Length: 77
Image (cartoon, rainbow, N blue to C red; front, side, top):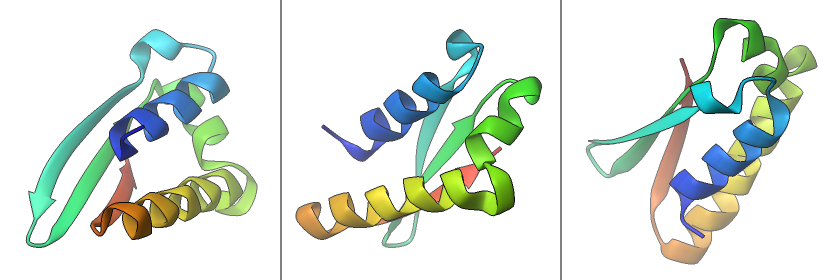
């Protein structure tokens, strides 16, 4: 499972409107940037209380980054 697929799967599992979830991938030097787009009403569910859900998603990305030898960054837009 790629990093993009993982972020999309987790986000779709959390939100009320899974059709509004999309992940855009871009490069910023050596870092692969994943931009997660969700519906405005679902933003709190994806970020979580005190950023706990977002932090957990970033931790999962670190695991994939280590396995694939890449550097990932997650931005929730």
